[in-house]
Length: 95
Image 1 (tube, rainbow, N blue to C red):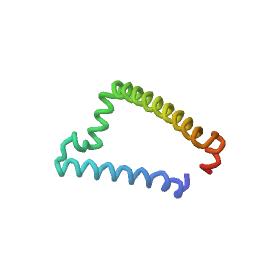
Image 2: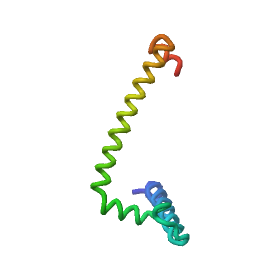
Image 3: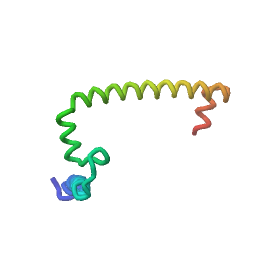
Image 4: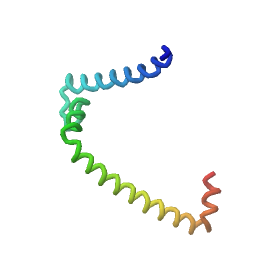
């Protein structure tokens, strides 16, 4: 592995680790309550201990979000095609 490629991999990892360390330090030094701003270690611990229940909640939320997106996308395309005459004219107006 060349030095340039190694640098391209390690530099972003180092910056990310530094930002997480700064975030954790600020939370601890300023004694910020976890319900306002949890530190990254608390977030990781919570994900580790409550992961399965959080994952099931995430799936429910994603299902609802995608259903709402599909419903509003369909309603929006019907609305625009009625007001502009055809869905083909909607395509040309967005280009």
